[in-house]
Length: 338
Image (tube, rainbow, N blue to C red; front, side, top):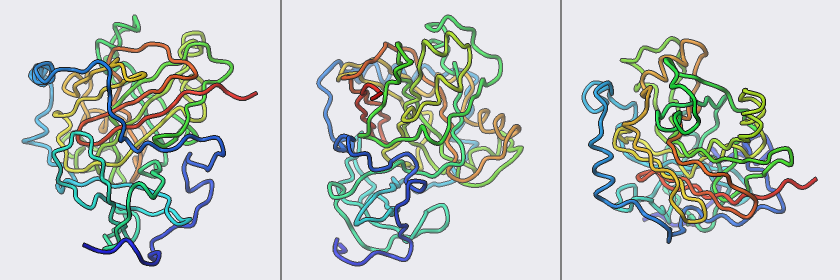
Protein backbone atom coordinates (compact mmCIF):
# COMPACT_ATOMS: atom_id res chain seq x y z
CA UNK A 1 0.00 0.00 0.00
CA UNK A 2 1.24 3.49 -0.74
CA UNK A 3 2.06 5.90 2.03
CA UNK A 4 -0.24 8.78 2.92
CA UNK A 5 2.76 11.10 2.98
CA UNK A 6 4.01 12.97 -0.06
CA UNK A 7 3.72 16.15 -2.06
CA UNK A 8 0.78 17.58 -3.97
CA UNK A 9 0.43 16.31 -7.52
CA UNK A 10 0.41 18.40 -10.67
CA UNK A 11 -3.34 17.85 -10.91
CA UNK A 12 -4.05 19.71 -7.65
CA UNK A 13 -6.17 22.85 -7.82
CA UNK A 14 -5.72 25.82 -5.52
CA UNK A 15 -8.92 26.72 -3.71
CA UNK A 16 -11.08 29.60 -4.89
CA UNK A 17 -14.73 30.38 -4.08
CA UNK A 18 -15.70 29.47 -7.66
CA UNK A 19 -13.86 26.15 -7.79
CA UNK A 20 -15.26 25.00 -4.47
CA UNK A 21 -18.72 24.97 -6.14
CA UNK A 22 -20.91 25.83 -3.19
CA UNK A 23 -18.50 24.59 -0.51
CA UNK A 24 -16.94 27.88 0.50
CA UNK A 25 -15.43 27.85 3.97
CA UNK A 26 -18.23 29.30 6.08
CA UNK A 27 -17.15 29.98 9.64
CA UNK A 28 -20.41 28.59 11.00
CA UNK A 29 -20.60 25.36 9.02
CA UNK A 30 -20.91 22.14 10.92
CA UNK A 31 -18.31 19.37 11.09
CA UNK A 32 -18.55 16.80 8.28
CA UNK A 33 -19.99 13.46 9.27
CA UNK A 34 -18.96 11.95 5.89
CA UNK A 35 -21.84 9.52 5.97
CA UNK A 36 -20.62 7.59 9.00
CA UNK A 37 -23.72 8.13 11.14
CA UNK A 38 -25.91 5.11 11.88
CA UNK A 39 -29.68 5.34 11.77
CA UNK A 40 -31.60 4.44 14.88
CA UNK A 41 -35.08 5.18 13.58
CA UNK A 42 -37.54 3.20 11.47
CA UNK A 43 -35.95 0.82 8.98
CA UNK A 44 -37.27 -0.86 5.86
CA UNK A 45 -37.10 -4.62 6.15
CA UNK A 46 -35.15 -6.79 3.72
CA UNK A 47 -38.44 -8.35 2.64
CA UNK A 48 -39.86 -4.91 1.75
CA UNK A 49 -36.72 -4.06 -0.24
CA UNK A 50 -36.99 -7.29 -2.23
CA UNK A 51 -40.69 -6.70 -2.84
CA UNK A 52 -39.94 -3.18 -4.08
CA UNK A 53 -37.39 -4.45 -6.56
CA UNK A 54 -39.90 -6.99 -7.84
CA UNK A 55 -42.37 -4.23 -8.70
CA UNK A 56 -40.72 -3.67 -12.08
CA UNK A 57 -43.00 -1.78 -14.49
CA UNK A 58 -43.32 -3.31 -17.93
CA UNK A 59 -42.29 -0.05 -19.65
CA UNK A 60 -38.82 0.05 -18.08
CA UNK A 61 -35.82 -0.24 -20.43
CA UNK A 62 -33.50 -3.21 -20.16
CA UNK A 63 -30.49 -1.43 -18.68
CA UNK A 64 -28.75 -4.71 -17.93
CA UNK A 65 -29.10 -6.09 -21.45
CA UNK A 66 -29.35 -3.32 -24.01
CA UNK A 67 -27.74 -0.21 -22.56
CA UNK A 68 -24.13 -0.67 -21.44
CA UNK A 69 -22.90 1.76 -18.82
CA UNK A 70 -20.26 4.18 -20.03
CA UNK A 71 -18.08 3.20 -17.07
CA UNK A 72 -18.07 -0.52 -16.36
CA UNK A 73 -15.50 -0.51 -13.55
CA UNK A 74 -17.17 -0.07 -10.17
CA UNK A 75 -15.54 2.68 -8.12
CA UNK A 76 -16.41 5.78 -6.10
CA UNK A 77 -14.89 9.14 -7.01
CA UNK A 78 -14.55 12.11 -4.66
CA UNK A 79 -13.60 15.78 -4.72
CA UNK A 80 -11.86 16.72 -1.51
CA UNK A 81 -10.10 19.61 0.16
CA UNK A 82 -6.74 18.49 1.51
CA UNK A 83 -3.66 20.46 2.51
CA UNK A 84 -5.13 23.72 1.26
CA UNK A 85 -5.98 22.49 -2.24
CA UNK A 86 -8.78 20.70 -4.04
CA UNK A 87 -7.99 17.15 -5.20
CA UNK A 88 -9.79 14.39 -7.02
CA UNK A 89 -9.67 10.98 -5.35
CA UNK A 90 -11.17 7.52 -5.56
CA UNK A 91 -11.91 4.78 -3.08
CA UNK A 92 -8.71 2.91 -2.20
CA UNK A 93 -10.71 -0.30 -1.81
CA UNK A 94 -13.79 -0.03 -4.06
CA UNK A 95 -14.99 -3.59 -3.46
CA UNK A 96 -17.01 -3.65 -0.25
CA UNK A 97 -20.03 -5.37 1.25
CA UNK A 98 -21.07 -2.20 3.10
CA UNK A 99 -24.31 -0.73 1.72
CA UNK A 100 -23.07 2.78 2.56
CA UNK A 101 -19.31 2.62 1.98
CA UNK A 102 -17.21 4.60 4.44
CA UNK A 103 -14.13 4.63 2.16
CA UNK A 104 -11.85 5.37 5.08
CA UNK A 105 -8.88 5.61 2.73
CA UNK A 106 -8.85 7.51 -0.55
CA UNK A 107 -6.32 7.34 -3.37
CA UNK A 108 -5.51 10.73 -4.88
CA UNK A 109 -5.80 11.20 -8.64
CA UNK A 110 -3.62 13.29 -10.94
CA UNK A 111 -6.66 15.33 -11.98
CA UNK A 112 -10.31 15.19 -12.97
CA UNK A 113 -11.14 11.56 -13.85
CA UNK A 114 -13.38 12.76 -16.69
CA UNK A 115 -10.29 14.44 -18.17
CA UNK A 116 -8.07 11.38 -17.77
CA UNK A 117 -6.93 11.79 -14.17
CA UNK A 118 -5.22 8.63 -12.88
CA UNK A 119 -4.37 7.30 -9.40
CA UNK A 120 -1.00 8.58 -8.22
CA UNK A 121 -0.53 5.97 -5.43
CA UNK A 122 -0.83 8.54 -2.65
CA UNK A 123 -3.32 7.55 0.05
CA UNK A 124 -5.07 9.88 2.47
CA UNK A 125 -7.39 9.18 5.38
CA UNK A 126 -10.92 10.34 4.68
CA UNK A 127 -11.15 11.64 8.23
CA UNK A 128 -8.36 14.12 7.43
CA UNK A 129 -10.06 15.71 4.40
CA UNK A 130 -13.16 17.75 3.67
CA UNK A 131 -15.53 16.04 1.26
CA UNK A 132 -16.79 18.45 -1.40
CA UNK A 133 -19.51 18.24 -4.05
CA UNK A 134 -18.15 15.33 -6.16
CA UNK A 135 -18.48 16.86 -9.64
CA UNK A 136 -18.28 20.24 -11.36
CA UNK A 137 -21.44 20.67 -13.45
CA UNK A 138 -22.34 23.45 -15.85
CA UNK A 139 -25.98 22.97 -14.84
CA UNK A 140 -28.31 21.03 -12.55
CA UNK A 141 -31.47 19.73 -14.22
CA UNK A 142 -34.36 18.63 -12.04
CA UNK A 143 -37.32 16.45 -13.01
CA UNK A 144 -40.65 17.10 -11.32
CA UNK A 145 -43.26 14.47 -10.49
CA UNK A 146 -41.27 11.54 -11.83
CA UNK A 147 -42.67 9.17 -9.19
CA UNK A 148 -46.43 8.69 -9.61
CA UNK A 149 -47.00 8.41 -5.85
CA UNK A 150 -45.23 11.74 -5.30
CA UNK A 151 -47.42 13.41 -7.92
CA UNK A 152 -50.44 11.99 -6.11
CA UNK A 153 -49.36 13.32 -2.72
CA UNK A 154 -48.81 16.73 -4.36
CA UNK A 155 -52.30 16.45 -5.90
CA UNK A 156 -50.81 17.01 -9.31
CA UNK A 157 -51.07 15.06 -12.56
CA UNK A 158 -48.26 12.82 -13.78
CA UNK A 159 -46.72 14.71 -16.72
CA UNK A 160 -46.91 12.89 -20.08
CA UNK A 161 -43.34 13.95 -20.84
CA UNK A 162 -40.54 14.91 -18.42
CA UNK A 163 -41.29 18.15 -16.56
CA UNK A 164 -37.85 19.68 -16.13
CA UNK A 165 -36.38 22.74 -14.41
CA UNK A 166 -32.95 24.18 -13.65
CA UNK A 167 -31.31 24.88 -10.30
CA UNK A 168 -28.51 27.47 -10.03
CA UNK A 169 -24.99 26.26 -9.30
CA UNK A 170 -25.09 28.37 -6.14
CA UNK A 171 -27.53 25.82 -4.67
CA UNK A 172 -24.74 23.21 -4.54
CA UNK A 173 -23.49 22.27 -1.09
CA UNK A 174 -21.70 19.17 0.23
CA UNK A 175 -22.66 16.61 2.80
CA UNK A 176 -22.36 18.00 6.31
CA UNK A 177 -22.99 21.61 5.31
CA UNK A 178 -26.03 23.54 6.44
CA UNK A 179 -29.30 23.90 4.55
CA UNK A 180 -30.39 27.49 5.16
CA UNK A 181 -34.14 27.95 5.62
CA UNK A 182 -34.84 31.36 4.02
CA UNK A 183 -36.78 33.83 6.14
CA UNK A 184 -39.32 34.07 3.28
CA UNK A 185 -40.07 30.32 3.48
CA UNK A 186 -42.49 28.89 6.02
CA UNK A 187 -42.78 25.38 4.54
CA UNK A 188 -39.43 23.81 3.67
CA UNK A 189 -39.33 20.36 2.04
CA UNK A 190 -36.55 17.92 1.25
CA UNK A 191 -36.65 15.84 -1.94
CA UNK A 192 -34.28 12.87 -1.79
CA UNK A 193 -33.21 11.74 -5.27
CA UNK A 194 -30.74 9.75 -7.31
CA UNK A 195 -28.67 12.00 -9.57
CA UNK A 196 -27.13 11.03 -12.89
CA UNK A 197 -23.71 12.56 -13.65
CA UNK A 198 -22.91 13.03 -17.34
CA UNK A 199 -19.57 11.78 -18.71
CA UNK A 200 -19.24 13.48 -22.10
CA UNK A 201 -20.75 16.22 -24.23
CA UNK A 202 -23.91 15.34 -26.06
CA UNK A 203 -26.79 16.91 -27.97
CA UNK A 204 -29.75 15.07 -29.48
CA UNK A 205 -28.69 11.86 -27.75
CA UNK A 206 -30.86 8.87 -28.56
CA UNK A 207 -32.30 6.69 -25.83
CA UNK A 208 -30.25 3.80 -27.20
CA UNK A 209 -27.00 5.74 -26.81
CA UNK A 210 -28.00 7.59 -23.64
CA UNK A 211 -26.27 5.36 -21.09
CA UNK A 212 -22.96 5.80 -22.91
CA UNK A 213 -23.12 9.41 -21.68
CA UNK A 214 -23.42 8.42 -18.00
CA UNK A 215 -20.32 8.67 -15.82
CA UNK A 216 -22.05 7.47 -12.68
CA UNK A 217 -24.53 8.29 -9.96
CA UNK A 218 -24.63 10.42 -6.84
CA UNK A 219 -27.16 11.49 -4.20
CA UNK A 220 -28.96 14.84 -4.23
CA UNK A 221 -31.47 16.59 -2.01
CA UNK A 222 -33.61 18.91 -4.15
CA UNK A 223 -34.59 21.23 -1.29
CA UNK A 224 -37.74 23.21 -2.03
CA UNK A 225 -39.53 26.18 -0.48
CA UNK A 226 -42.92 24.56 -0.93
CA UNK A 227 -45.10 27.49 0.12
CA UNK A 228 -43.32 29.72 -2.38
CA UNK A 229 -43.69 27.11 -5.13
CA UNK A 230 -47.40 26.69 -4.41
CA UNK A 231 -47.96 30.43 -4.32
CA UNK A 232 -45.97 31.27 -7.46
CA UNK A 233 -46.62 28.03 -9.36
CA UNK A 234 -43.01 28.19 -10.51
CA UNK A 235 -39.71 26.50 -9.75
CA UNK A 236 -36.92 29.07 -10.04
CA UNK A 237 -37.26 30.87 -6.72
CA UNK A 238 -38.66 27.94 -4.75
CA UNK A 239 -35.78 25.65 -5.71
CA UNK A 240 -33.08 28.24 -6.31
CA UNK A 241 -31.97 29.44 -2.88
CA UNK A 242 -28.34 29.00 -1.91
CA UNK A 243 -27.70 25.60 -0.20
CA UNK A 244 -30.82 24.06 -1.81
CA UNK A 245 -28.89 21.22 -3.52
CA UNK A 246 -26.80 19.08 -1.17
CA UNK A 247 -24.93 16.56 -3.37
CA UNK A 248 -22.53 13.71 -2.61
CA UNK A 249 -20.68 12.12 -1.09
CA UNK A 250 -19.17 10.63 -4.28
CA UNK A 251 -19.89 9.64 -7.86
CA UNK A 252 -20.30 5.86 -8.00
CA UNK A 253 -19.66 4.14 -11.32
CA UNK A 254 -20.56 0.73 -12.71
CA UNK A 255 -23.94 0.52 -10.96
CA UNK A 256 -27.22 -0.72 -12.39
CA UNK A 257 -29.69 2.09 -11.65
CA UNK A 258 -32.62 -0.32 -11.67
CA UNK A 259 -31.14 -1.97 -8.56
CA UNK A 260 -31.00 1.30 -6.60
CA UNK A 261 -33.33 2.68 -3.94
CA UNK A 262 -33.30 6.23 -2.61
CA UNK A 263 -34.19 6.77 1.04
CA UNK A 264 -34.63 9.92 3.12
CA UNK A 265 -34.51 10.13 6.90
CA UNK A 266 -35.43 13.17 8.97
CA UNK A 267 -33.96 13.08 12.47
CA UNK A 268 -33.26 9.35 11.94
CA UNK A 269 -36.90 8.59 11.02
CA UNK A 270 -37.50 7.06 7.57
CA UNK A 271 -39.72 9.26 5.39
CA UNK A 272 -38.98 8.25 1.79
CA UNK A 273 -38.26 4.88 0.18
CA UNK A 274 -38.18 4.96 -3.61
CA UNK A 275 -36.96 2.15 -5.89
CA UNK A 276 -35.69 3.57 -9.17
CA UNK A 277 -37.82 0.98 -10.98
CA UNK A 278 -40.77 3.27 -10.18
CA UNK A 279 -39.58 6.23 -12.25
CA UNK A 280 -42.32 7.39 -14.61
CA UNK A 281 -39.75 8.52 -17.17
CA UNK A 282 -36.65 6.30 -16.91
CA UNK A 283 -33.09 7.54 -17.15
CA UNK A 284 -32.52 6.88 -20.90
CA UNK A 285 -35.66 8.83 -21.73
CA UNK A 286 -34.61 11.70 -19.44
CA UNK A 287 -31.19 11.98 -21.09
CA UNK A 288 -32.66 11.85 -24.60
CA UNK A 289 -35.38 14.39 -23.76
CA UNK A 290 -33.11 16.87 -21.98
CA UNK A 291 -30.39 16.65 -24.63
CA UNK A 292 -32.97 17.45 -27.30
CA UNK A 293 -33.33 20.84 -25.59
CA UNK A 294 -29.86 21.65 -24.28
CA UNK A 295 -26.36 20.30 -24.74
CA UNK A 296 -25.15 18.17 -21.84
CA UNK A 297 -21.55 18.53 -20.69
CA UNK A 298 -19.26 16.38 -18.52
CA UNK A 299 -20.20 16.72 -14.87
CA UNK A 300 -23.75 17.93 -15.50
CA UNK A 301 -26.28 16.65 -12.96
CA UNK A 302 -29.73 15.26 -13.72
CA UNK A 303 -31.82 14.81 -10.56
CA UNK A 304 -34.21 12.02 -11.52
CA UNK A 305 -37.16 12.81 -9.23
CA UNK A 306 -38.29 12.20 -5.68
CA UNK A 307 -40.59 9.50 -4.23
CA UNK A 308 -43.52 10.15 -1.93
CA UNK A 309 -43.06 10.84 1.76
CA UNK A 310 -42.44 14.54 2.25
CA UNK A 311 -42.94 16.30 5.56
CA UNK A 312 -42.03 19.89 6.42
CA UNK A 313 -38.61 20.40 8.00
CA UNK A 314 -37.46 23.27 10.17
CA UNK A 315 -34.29 24.64 11.73
CA UNK A 316 -32.88 22.06 14.12
CA UNK A 317 -33.82 19.11 11.90
CA UNK A 318 -31.25 16.95 10.09
CA UNK A 319 -32.03 15.49 6.67
CA UNK A 320 -30.16 12.38 5.48
CA UNK A 321 -30.55 11.09 1.92
CA UNK A 322 -28.94 7.77 1.00
CA UNK A 323 -28.61 5.30 -1.84
CA UNK A 324 -27.03 1.92 -1.07
CA UNK A 325 -23.89 1.46 -3.14
CA UNK A 326 -23.23 5.20 -3.29
CA UNK A 327 -23.46 6.57 0.23
CA UNK A 328 -25.28 9.09 2.36
CA UNK A 329 -25.49 12.88 2.56
CA UNK A 330 -26.43 14.43 5.90
CA UNK A 331 -27.30 18.10 6.27
CA UNK A 332 -28.68 20.08 9.23
CA UNK A 333 -31.33 22.76 8.66
CA UNK A 334 -30.65 26.22 10.10
CA UNK A 335 -32.54 29.50 10.04
CA UNK A 336 -31.36 32.32 7.81
CA UNK A 337 -29.46 35.01 9.66
CA UNK A 338 -30.97 38.38 8.82
